[in-house]
Image 1 (cartoon, rainbow, N blue to C red):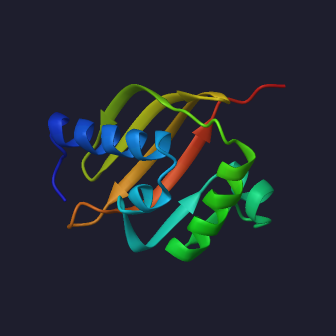
Image 2 (cartoon, rainbow, N blue to C red):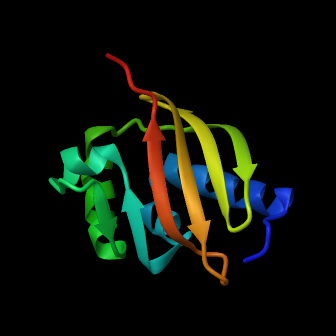
Length: 122
């Protein structure tokens, strides 16, 4: 995938934020390829996966369901969008404070890899 235009990156990011704020996991998953890989320090907590990485929509959906159930008032506020060659980063505020998600894309514009980063307190 070539460098994302600012408009395309913003549209992806706003759609992703909107899907999360609606708690619509099907809409969230629509942003990803079927075999995508997701890493987060919270995967260890909510999916009991010691590597912090899940592969495939089924595994990630189970994790997101558990995580969302623990935070029924989940809401994200978009702060900024950073673009790269075949990737983007969404900077947002959530219930944990400032966070970022890095997405790497395939040629079809679907995220094949996602990495979640959170502000650490304590």
